[in-house]
Length: 192
Image (cartoon, rainbow, N blue to C red; front, side, top):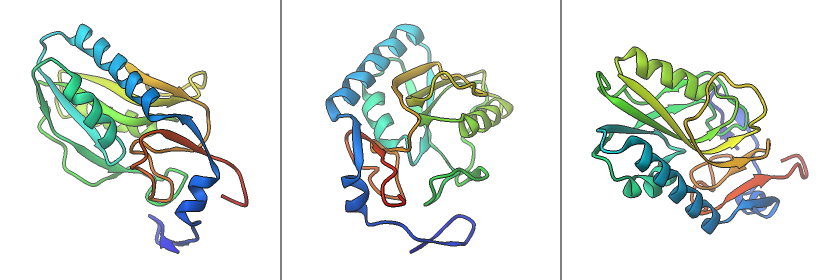
């Protein structure tokens, strides 16, 4: 039992059970190849522009760790930490866990693990632009349900995913499994 972001006690299943009752949607090699393709597109598009890379923590940490060493433009790195999920599988209000970096006049590359409904990225992108960024580019590891209208469109998407709860490669389920090198999806089994 853990506490949710709203202070409620939440029953969560055993981590091994969650993994056993999931489907692997993209293995480590598939993820690695998709990130390499994204890096190549960014290198071509951004050339020698100076870029401030801002991964959204904690979810995009593994993604950013694989992508950033492949980028060839001069860049600086400064993370942004926000949360909408905590230990829950449904998003709540956006909570800022770190101060906004100094983005005034910068070309900012926001990196996130998943573009689902687009609420988090829309709010963070608006905050970055309001703080004076010259330009804000969005790159995501995964996008779910690309046919559903969203308030934001990513400039770069490594992998398209079905509309299921996904975890691994920085994305968690009940706080676990961010460390998986592939991407898994929960099954609706025994109340999970």
